[in-house]
Length: 90
Image 1 (tube, rainbow, N blue to C red):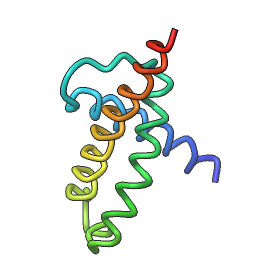
Image 2 (image 1 turned 90 degrees about the vertical axis):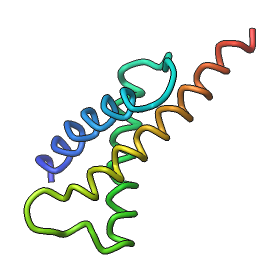
Image 3 (image 1 turned 180 degrees about the vertical axis):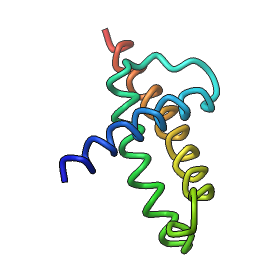
Image 4 (image 1 turned 30 degrees about the vertical axis):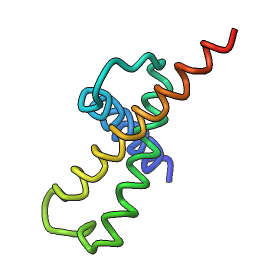
């Protein structure tokens, strides 16, 4: 159980940073928020991959990984927009 949580955090962090690289424009969000978005994207991406029946394949699940990266990029873009607007309300 603890190993799964640690693994989710590590994979989520990587997905968050890759999603941040893929997302268009500049994202002014903190690193911790990028990691959280990546973790959420990993779970949502796996769920979507399971819906399409591509989550459990032999070897590396490339399609699932691509779905997770796309979800992370969308998530980073949305969160950056929301987080950026938060500071404008002065």
